[in-house]
Picture 1 (cartoon, rainbow, N blue to C red):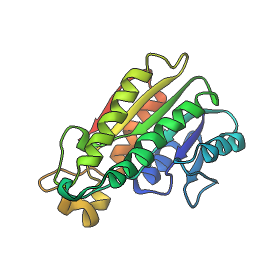
Picture 2 (cartoon, rainbow, N blue to C red):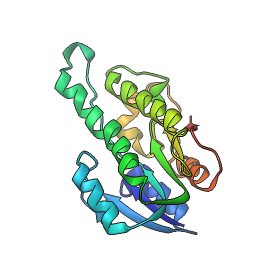
Picture 3 (cartoon, helix red, strand yellow):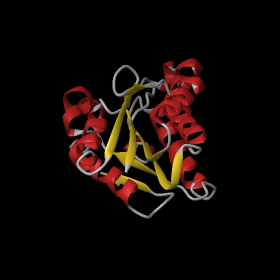
Picture 4 (cartoon, rainbow, N blue to C red):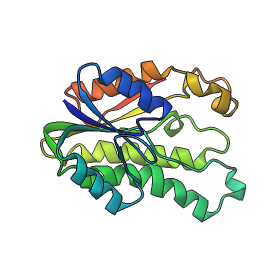
Length: 198
């Protein structure tokens, strides 16, 4: 299969590439590096990406920024940054990309454990991840001939030095284990599912 992996240079993305490149043609995409570059907050950039890659069999998004900070200090502009980046960025990828995914192909988006298990300073992340899961659940009913799922990882083992203090008591998962959920989404038959790796 010809698979587009957006966020390929990130920790999760590298795990996905390592897992899927053994038996697929993987196209690595990032904001600043990769086979192609894309800014998911820009409709023009997303359209340019698909014009360059042509049709693919699967699209995986393992990227998206959110705002972390106390709700008591949060501004609407800060909250909107997560909506524009992780939420609408991935939604935009589906809305535009559905014309470039071959029949029987799939989208796999990335949410996160905070959709169900909030942490201090993570209000924006919880809202964005929950909205993405709602999008996947509903869009699966209308993407004729295509599948869509999401992967919801816990904090990554490789990122514990940076993010561990924000996730006290959470069990981590290595990127290689998280990558298996993306494999399941791409190679499986289900749609409208959220694969939770935690």
